[in-house]
Image (cartoon, rainbow, N blue to C red):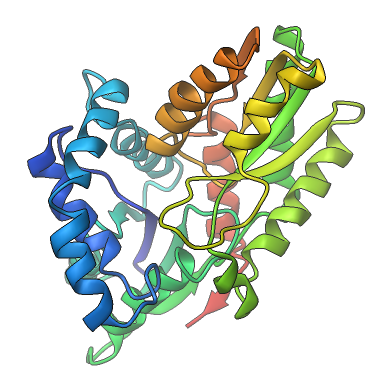
Length: 318
């Protein structure tokens, strides 16, 4: 048996420039799982209003988190692949992105060419959403729809409830909490339009269950959950992280620690939105101390956990 392992994440521009950001945004915002508006209505908005303006703004954000090694998401993903490859020397370990190179279909084709006949796919999203894991499943099933040979497939559709993942995250939070002098933990999840939840997306429920499991593991650490990254004018899941953080100092809570359990790899939403934008808003509102827990990234424990998912996948057999 020729085993393959494919890690999948959202993606990242190749450079922090409007030119590099534009195709990334176009691909992302053209995904029918992400934007459900009818195409005749959405395409003019995307092409005439968003893409002429948004890439410059997004590029400026990326410039503030870019490192000498490049995008944090790409850097940590490469480390995840390298370290997982060390644990599975007889397997072929690759990574793919939904909206940037290397794309999912390209990596599936490369694994096919390499003769992989047993493939484990791990979207690096702890909670399931139609906008993330659902989109990945669309890509995978579309690729294999007309292939002459389909390998044995295991897709991990979520792992928010896995005890090892929760223990790793709780341990990282606890270490950061003990290293500071905080009053409140803010657990911030990526947001989602409320209409998606109303149609049956389980993401909000899984976020609630993640929070409950963390609360149980963290003992007496006071915490509150919220949602970030709202995009567009519609109603999204609440409360908004920005509003929660801006309101805490008036309640006498001026020292906060923030963590985002919806992300396993640091990216624009963690490093810029939480690490810079929301921090500045909290301090401007009278906050005094603001800490941010890094994602699990390529931590040894997280790589071991990914190995567990390879050996004992929890998800869907295709």
